[in-house]
Image (tube, rainbow, N blue to C red; front, top):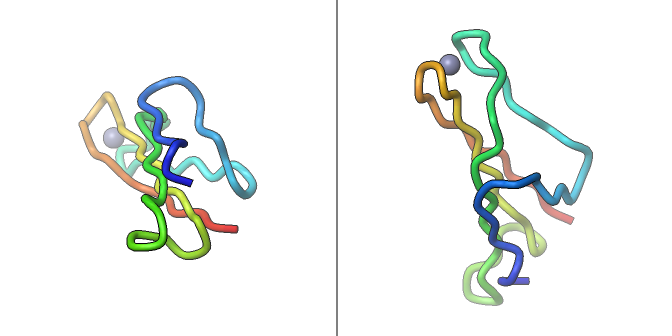
Length: 67
Ligand SMILES: [Zn+2]
């Protein structure tokens, strides 16, 4: 926990892959994943936030997964 931050590359999914759809119907690209920081900032049960961006309309969406 706290060492799984990543920008670019591929998401390190905790659960099944869950890539959000953009409102403009373009596919969204993985941008970053943000890890729980430790006991003080634990997202659910050591969860992770995945950030996606649409390069067409610059909308971002995030997905939260936890154990
Ligand atoms: Zn879009």
